[in-house]
Image (cartoon, rainbow, N blue to C red; front, side, top):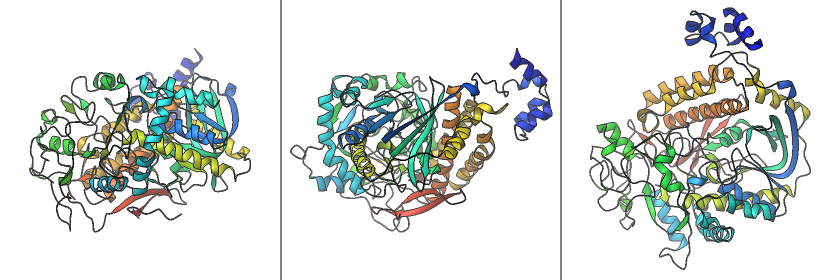
Length: 591
């Protein structure tokens, strides 16, 4: 009754004041009577005065419990560090890990290619966008990681919690699940921990750590039909907010969904979830770019297309460039001839000699696009590494797997199973590097003032008397970003139009996101992260005035090797504004 009385007693003037003078929808609806405003009034289900606050200290804090997180925790522990793992979901059962069923193992005794030849061929498919150091690292250590997974029983079940738990429990590594991390904490120019809250215990949590490893995966805009709905670029945006450089926002993942029950993730991909994992060998490809999107844009007939490599595409003029070497039999690109359009200032594709037929696992049947909207090619987006040890430009902060913009495979899918292998390898590398870093760091403390500041930021949505639902703002963002002619088939005027909407969400709607319980509080912070990621994606896409791999511009359809053999990095300046820099391919950034 108390809450109902509060609703009825609120004046229109007070409501407009609380919502920052919002116009449009709020103002129009307010004229209809206060009963119509019930949707905007916040009715917290939590007594904020009774919320607990916990603080825990460790050497290495691993955020995320997928494949990268598993090996980061195990290898950091084995290198002598005290390790704590926190996860938004359940060990081995959250993010994209349950979907991953193929893991690449490079066995030099069984492969026709040498390690050097493998790296060169991946670089050819990636059109120079891959980082050779991480391509080599993944292949070189993949077999060792696969053998460890075999020992833990990974290949014995379609579910991974049991096999992941084995090495964790053997080492007595503490795992805290259903924890939403919202902030990385930096003091004295180095990372000192993280903060967030528990969904179940209604507590604000602080973690003091000598080193933090982000194994938080990639993200999207919560699209339907693909299993990335709980990934929202949390790690990337948290790191960006404390000064880390991030990269890869212009690239696009092209995984389609099945046309039958297109919005139902399990219906479309259940056969993948139910499979036991297996290993893959060398099969270098050039897959899952934007060819399907280009055909759909031109003839409106995506359902006539088969899976990548099936040869069922309807020919249209122009289209993304694919190296001739990776044009499979009966696979004619949209350009109507093998190899598509050659790069600006260059000649046709590399020599023939690729192998591989058929579609990647799960790609059969009639398909539709947009199912993974907002995600880039695996390993092509995330924190910028300053070396081959998964280290960011923030001392003590590491990332692995899809949270690290390592460009291990470049800006196109080049090797089936390499994503899962790369997560395992990079997790191990980051774990060992973080443990080594910790040995030179004295015990650290998060200042009381910093804790108070972050606590206020975390809980602010619960204290709003009125505002926007995070679900509604997310739906608005999806309507802006997911259309084929915005995120996949790009041109400047539409990108700038979408950016104007996203900047409105950033400036006016983020401060007014409300939450009534801990679940909704999680949604608020996820929505914030998606909005900032959308801003990055649009600005990077506008800036990259060429087409290459999974980035396609209608107004700049050619690959420009004269000006764009670079990665685009994004960072905050001293005033908090988003800035961009070019980093030449196969170089390390200046620190």
